[in-house]
Length: 360
Ligand SMILES: NC(=O)c1ccc[n+]([C@@H]2O[C@H](COP(=O)([O-])OP(=O)(O)OC[C@H]3O[C@@H](n4cnc5c(N)ncnc54)[C@H](O)[C@@H]3O)[C@@H](O)[C@H]2O)c1
Ligand SMILES: [Zn+2]
Image 1 (cartoon, protein in one colour):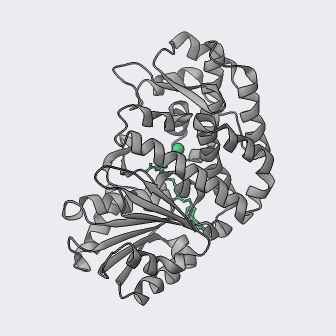
Image 2 (cartoon, protein in one colour; image 1 turned 180 degrees about the horizontal axis):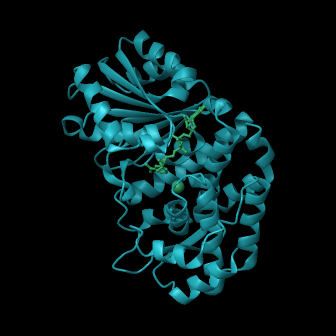
């Protein structure tokens, strides 16, 4: 088992990574000094079928008084309505300040489960048990919890750290292949922003990763969590450096918004956004074509579609309404080389038009 510490001054916590951890959550929680208590296990219907029992049983063996509540799968469920239903479940089960919420599932369950935990009685303890690759390397770490609003994705939320994160690499064996690939984009993102070795490793071991080789998965998940933990420890509330995690996300979000979050998975849109950001960096003389080609080659091998088929003007219009606009200026994360990026608010509309018009 690998253990990574997220070092925060007020509320640090551990990330545990291993195969088969879902069956040991009860024991590990006791080791974390969590007394047995009323526990609401929040999951979605896909994940419940496969892992609901194993997790409930593991908690019950250690005397946690568990009730399971399961939402329909899908991004549409990350809403205030579903949160309302979950608050009802909290009241029904008579949860109190010492109770526990366990979020078992992908990023949707983690985000809404964390949001409910952060707001019920002004905040009760919760743990993340992420089961998709995206949730394991990204959304379960760092304490951003949220639901969507019709006016914008993730717009209602807060920073609320879990007590611990339990990552079972074995759960990836049941994850649909396209979800694995979409999550892998975020891992490649970490390579570009912070770690050339990780990027090289993925170039060399893509086959092993998609074949779910245990050692390969452990390696990329461990390295990704370490990078995210370090960035979050440096800048928990995204005042500055944490923004580098948004590499590829500025244009990626615009693509998701324009396609109603239906045509592309988040990771697919981010892959396109990463290529656009790199083209912008090339256009501004900050990096070279090899940085672009290496990313494109990987994405192509992963079978990702790289052309959003959208109108340039529409993308630009959406960009200026993105919440990442700071005082009217767009903020981009631009690569200098594989392993190093800068935060820039110097991207002009001219450059944007040029890059978006010519495609990637
Ligand atoms: N909080 C953050 O910092 C942060 C960061 C990135 C993304 N997110 C959020 O994460 C969400 C996306 O997360 P996601 O990609 O995990 O989507 P998701 O939660 O919708 O999961 C994807 C699909 O895989 C299924 N699934 C999950 N694990 C499975 C498993 N082991 N076996 C079989 N099926 C499984 C789910 O039921 C779902 O159908 C978005 O809402 C996004 O906003 C949050
Ligand atoms: Zn992302």
